Length: 190
Length: 190
DNA sequence: GTTGTTGGCCAACGCTTGTTGACAACCCTA
DNA sequence: TAGGGTTGTCAACAAGCGTTGGCCAACAAC
Image (cartoon, rainbow over all chains, first blue to last red; front, side, top):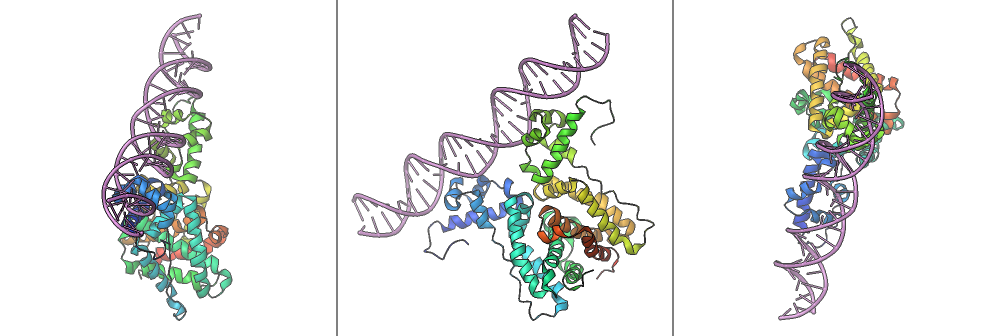
């Protein structure tokens, strides 16, 4: 996404420092409040450089948003452990970097952001769900249920930072959420 | 919040038409993209009237955000039905008006918005939880878990509008989510 | 050493934002 | 019928935004 392995350019340092600053700003401020000027200031360069290397603010944002849910291989797994494994995986994803936080922040206020989120849901979570739900026919619905619980916890824990949710240990979150996710995947339709 | 029952003013129509327009704009656009000018245009008046009657954009927003979770009396209820009753109540809340949508949209991008959300959580959901969880000591944690699932479903269903989540019937949502909420309230700590 | 390319800064543009103050029209009271 | 508060419009403001183009220094190729 950030270009081929092309001949090293002298400007690569600048390019990535812009990208790094943008990642942080978008993650903490959302799309509108993250101004090109502020990002440039963080990166220690002139705002016009952002335009030169990424075309526009939209272009920069597109370069920042590159989500890979990156599920582990679930084929061989004991189906009863799906809940634990998935919740653990999502927690790692949310804590590893800021891109999901960014996407959630922006998806809520920005149409193109929520488009991207729906796209991630449809092209990554749903296909994955098809491989591990009992009946592929209702994979979409079960994926949506899983998304509601996982995104909801991410929301109160990492974005809104409700005290009790933010303070829970990772183990506690897994212990509470895994049975929920497990049920959304394997339980019979109520 | 909107003032005492004071002598009817001629401007009351204007005041409430501003408030109505603001509610819709904030709900659909979030705080930043909902401009005073757009709200005034919707209300059919001059932008300066907004300032006259609400002081500032922040003041207008404060007037819009007045959330009452308004729980039904749960004292006499069969404890096994808590999940169903609560999920049903929350669904009604989300579908009745736009204020919760507004608060969620703004809470995610705006510091004062997330302050308000945390406040609603702490002063309305947690106290309510104390009345119906088995042990008041962990009411906060259980309330946070409930919030994560309820807010998560609201997010994917009403704000992000993931297809499968938005298409579910209200009955299906209740059937799926009620056992989760029930477990978060009454299950022993795992 | 000259020349063309790349990397960077600076100053400005056109636009939109929240907000303000002056001023006209209306209504009620005296 | 005069006067004072209320309701509204209009034009403008200062600030901030994304974005553009010109200019200079550092480098690379010949």
